[in-house]
Image 1 (cartoon, rainbow, N blue to C red):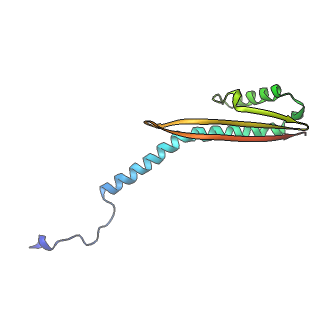
Image 2 (cartoon, rainbow, N blue to C red):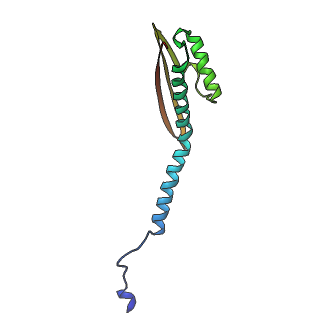
Image 3 (tube, rainbow, N blue to C red):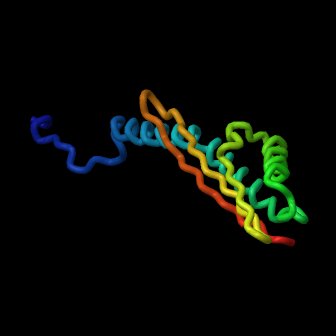
Amino acid sequence: MLRQGFKYKHQKGFTITGWLFIIALFLYFAYLAMVISPYVIGNHTMNRILESLTEVPGITQKSQREIMRLIKNRMSINQVSDIDEEAFDIEKDGDKVIVYLEYDDKIHFMGNVYILIERNKSVELIRN
């Protein structure tokens, strides 16, 4: 008799299924962050390298080859090795030089799923 009238009127807390769902969601986003974070750090490093060119005295008088050598040296110091010389475009126009960086990162996420990150950065170097 007691069993027939016994019903859960108010559930308190999460069920095990709810907890498993939340844990799976947390692990998914943690894995996503672990996969993407090295590329975000690399992008930040390349931005700093390009911005540091504005502090080089007489940068606008240097040839494109010398500017590229400066960039390669900075990349070597910062241990950036996955960007090749073809990703850069250096244009000289009178008293200013514009350095363009454009490349894509294709990140294997899981299975046959990839993440594509497009990078576009340009820095205008003016005679100092």
